[in-house]
Length: 85
Image 1 (tube, one colour):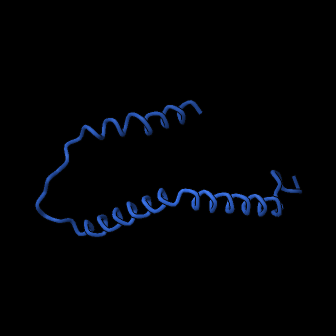
Image 2: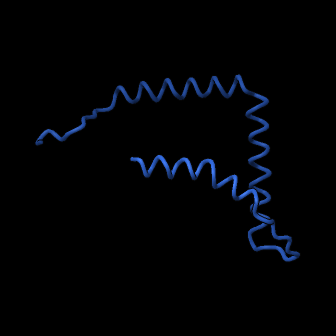
């Protein structure tokens, strides 16, 4: 458990800080998937802007989905150990 905690700390704090110090390559040639990455980044940016512009609607959808998930969970049969144990 201690190793997982230390690993999580390093992954979430030190790695991004150290990665920001790396030099960015400036190649003139385009990679095969660079256009796909650019389009995905634009789509992500647009989605984030839409969600932030419609925060109340997003929150309402979240509340409805969380409520439905809770209702579905209460309907499921679950147990920690099989009946034969």
